[in-house]
Image (cartoon, rainbow, N blue to C red; front, side, top):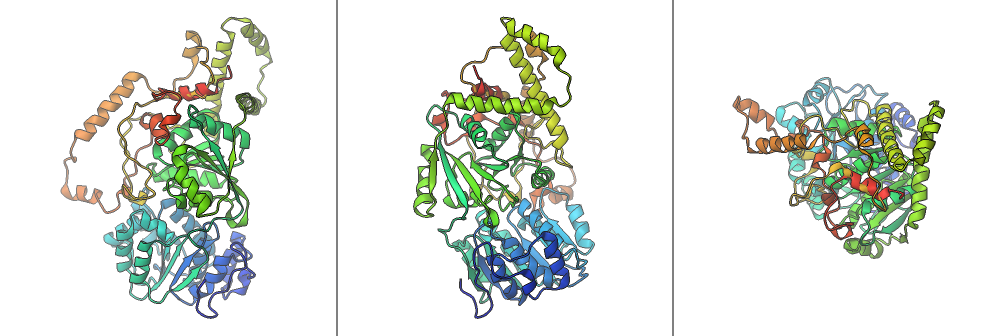
Length: 609
């Protein structure tokens, strides 16, 4: 750590210093806000940063993920905002919508005793509400580069009184392709203002930005490229040839039984497939990816932070900088190509000195990432093996039995006992009972989704409905341009599209007995009929052929503003998910050379026959 003499206090550890917040020159109002957050002792990065920031010094701060960087700049900037301020005084730029909203929530609590409001400017939400917040006198502004730039172009954001700007997770913001947007925003701000740059890593592009916009910055270096987050145990489960990753994933979940976990996927297709499958297995799972409407992303994150979601299935872009208290596990459905992405993912657990467990599904295609993690970052990767199939079946049946017991409640079921005994004695009894169980789990999934659905949600269950034709999702600015690191929307040749039933069968050991026709017809249909799916494809093809809609040129130009996030993408449907896309780097791990036809194929891998 290099600092000017006397300006930064060396931290005792990454997660705790020898300084309490009452030791800093902070006002009563800000100290009350800090107490509301439950903070008592500053972390290392906070102890080193608060006083220089209060003094107005430009700063470059590098610290590990999960060490309290957000509060390290929010606290001093909350202090610098005048009581009752009614014009923008501070601007914070963040790479993703979720991180911006998270920072806005932090600032709002810290400023709650100063009569100061916070405005969060992100894409995917109505721009009118954000304009109203700015007009009402918000003084602490947090946003993503694209939407902030849009407000600047529209004349909504007055920058004349802004005295400080923060570039949060700067390296990630630039790696996602926001260099041009960030520089345009900085050019629109008053000259000579305080610039604070916080990041876990520093790339050459970040250094260019520092040289261009910062004069003699104070550099506080609390981490290096080889650093890793302490307190996290790292496990590897190898997926053998002939074994499908989804089967391995459900086995790991049954073995580890995590209280809460983020499951990271390399692609959006992977994320949608995993979330839908876990939901079909009766597990509390929610999907968050860059193509979901912002209202749904926000609702899911609120539910996660309230502890109402056990498994959050996410892509790297959507989960950038997310802070979830007491997250016990991080699961990598696929190892990322970039070891730095692995460090960021696993840093979601073990935050502020807590313990965590990182689990990764591993195949031969990820040997390079594994070697870099072990040799460069010194991470001890512990190889684990899945137990025998018989034990996995026992664990799965135990979980399903618990789910049935939990749903029983005060249900009167004794009158069905003679029917059960009679069914067991029938030649087709097993098939009939299997169909009944399938219907029960579908009902229970719907029941739980209705009880715990995120507020203000427009259908953000892991398995989206298909009430309207699926459209090609529009890419938001906040998700980064194509071809950059962190982009999880890899383009591939079209694959065979499964229905929701085909993934289920991949989890069976043997072919499950076919249910009789009368039992099968009693099971609620999850997918639209084949002719409806064909109609959807024809509608999508027609939309692709159509040009811009006729209308007023000015309205069309307004719609195509700098921030395309204004038009949120439509809901994701499982018509858009292909299992082959869900495991692009593990084609050799497929059970057969051809992809399964539906989610039912995955369910079938869990058959106990």
